[in-house]
Length: 341
Image 1 (tube, rainbow, N blue to C red):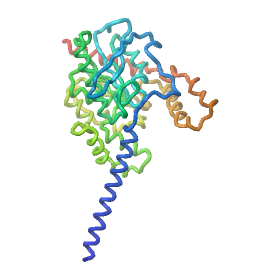
Image 2 (image 1 turned 135 degrees about the vertical axis):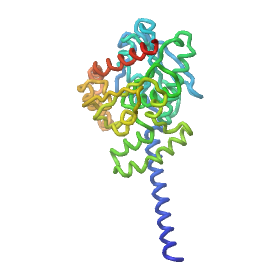
Image 3 (image 1 turned 30 degrees about the vertical axis):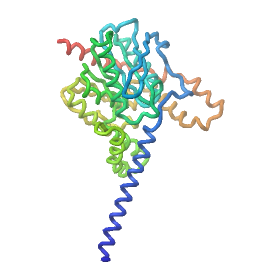
Image 4 (image 1 turned 120 degrees about the horizontal axis):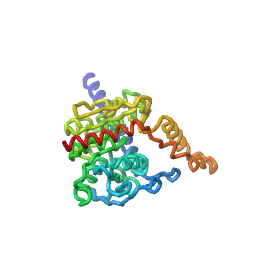
């Protein structure tokens, strides 16, 4: 056999090996991120409707073969302005991790419908499966609202953080709403995985994983896989407010919907000095980072050290930035008025 044939075989074998290795790495990352449930952490304290004096009506929503559970939250009965916010939660313990924000919107006169995505806290599912399951949950919540006698005539908004921001932006392309608010939203599932990978792997290797991460998402969701959140909201022409912190390391700015979304229907707010939770005050963000670091070390803590979590000031760690929160409320109220003209 000629030497150049041997060389071609060796190069081809090396290419196949590299491709298989990248796919295996991407599959591992995908399953690590999405292959298990996200439930409440028993070490942490979560707020409930009772902490804020909110009315809560439990809701069960069928989504495919699963039942998604959550609540319809209000302050003093029907929302004063007749608007309904469908709140889409981020990765973690479901919508219970966002009760402070839900309370804020209720205080502005909105009703808030918040359910847990598949594989999260109250809802069915052995795993969260992938980012698109959040889009499915948002659409299911919308369909529930439009079929409910009490809710069907209300103005509807999608709002969400992180995974929920991605869910809200993609869902508004498939359901007609008055507006959408997305906070710290990733651009796409593959981009989100590679963005996180870039923090622990060489950047060239993380970038090379992108098509393989997209393939993993395709195996999970078929033709609806790896949707581009920026393109979805652009095509929908839905009024949108996209907020991102310039110090976000969870969803780096370059991997965000904020960086790519353009259009007359889109407003952007860059929260300078803010990380992944730009709706919180700087001090609250520092406390949340400290809490996260201690959670990572919890397995090595003794009983006395674990007392840290019981004594942690959760109210201070979820203190809201009035400027950011008011910007979201003002945007929705403005979109609501514009729709009625």
